[in-house]
Image (cartoon, rainbow, N blue to C red; front, side, top):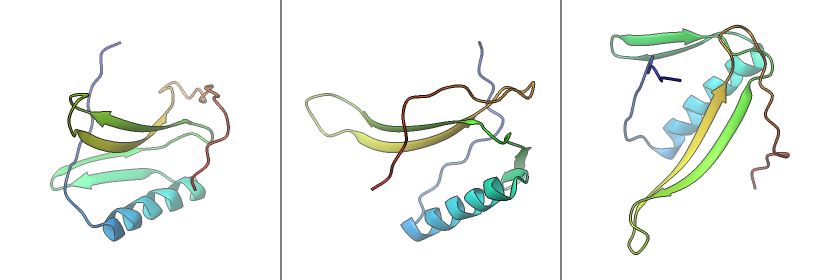
Length: 95
């Protein structure tokens, strides 16, 4: 299935700024309200269902024999038709 990017933003931020942004997203999820992503003149509003699929991924990109780029990715997925997520792979924990 082809992928269409509806919104994308990338910027260097402090840990505190990132934590504040993630707290805002968490508050919207907890309240069950829409999430609007905005950067400059670009914006998109999305309404995750009550049980989206939540994917967390830690990656290392680059050559295997030298330093690469590390990332932690958080992703919410759901069907546009209103379907709930259905992926299960165990309880996620952060220590």
